[in-house]
Length: 421
Ligand code: RNT
Ligand code: ZN
Image 1 (cartoon, rainbow, N blue to C red):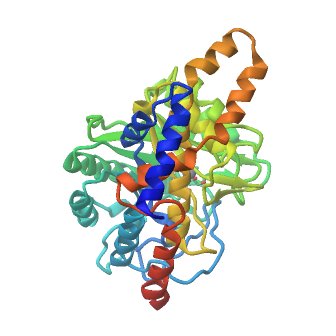
Image 2 (cartoon, rainbow, N blue to C red; image 1 turned 45 degrees about the vertical axis):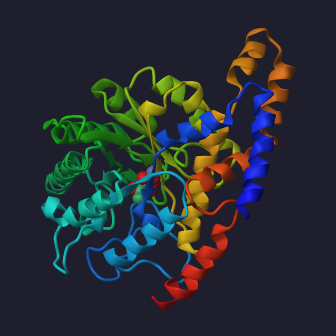
């Protein structure tokens, strides 16, 4: 798209929003606070680098699709991430899983991992001026095969996973320390049961005990922020997930941990956008896993849909940008993975920019005076404003392709790089 065209369209958009008292320049400037953590696992279908050809195994999550070009090494993954970041306006963060360490061809079991396996990632992040986030990997491992990890009744298994998560916190805190920006370490475990268990309470009590042990060591919060992620059900854990919403909401509130809300982890009619203002009254910070649920699956590429828009609106309306950490969480192997990354991240950014462009004061006034039609008309009207021109200007200001011009760049990357893998 020609620069002049983006510029001209933006001038019109700016004028249009100004009639509602909305300052588009200001909204674009505020986008610097919207730092989205890129989930490294979209580049390789949650495989990791523990051994050659590692693939996702178990854990109630699944990747489908066999599109060529999956990243097979840290070098390839870094290259992919650099490509992705070159097509996104603003600064991002990178979200790593414990299986993505630099193990140098050695087998390193999960309870043995340490900072040295992630130092090259820290150096890479430093070079790019970005922060890192982290996740213990409590799946794709023989000790997770029976479906229980931190809530296992087998003490050897439970202790193994407690040790893994403790090691992850050491690594995450070091990442935060070296990079000068706190690392969010998010605990998600697959534990659950396919059919009706009779001792839900037993497993949940064990999970509490494990978490208490894990959090015994404290770290400065400038280095590390601990998050816990709930789920309603997974593949093979349909009847019960130990770490349910109530479980983690209670735990996070009691112990002031970050509560992670993944919008693919609830009943399809539940909106996590509606939960944000409540949770923020009781925990200091939230972590969002932004995704797109489709029927029973929670991990499709994010698009700019109502659900994502409500999430962003609620964060902005609550003036909570500094208390909400945003991560993406989807994995689709059926299309160009770099493309999936860029489409999804841009959609999430767009939701936030759109929310920043809302004439909140006007709409609130209508709401407070019982004028529901006017409120609805405004909310609908905002959807067809010249929003695209504002996002394009944000891209232009950041020297990345506007509109859908990134398609050609990704096609080129596919033809020159991905196809040779
Ligand atoms: C799984 C959770 C979790 C994972 C990642 C890979 O249902 O959403 O966040 O997707 O850890
Ligand atoms: Zn998630």
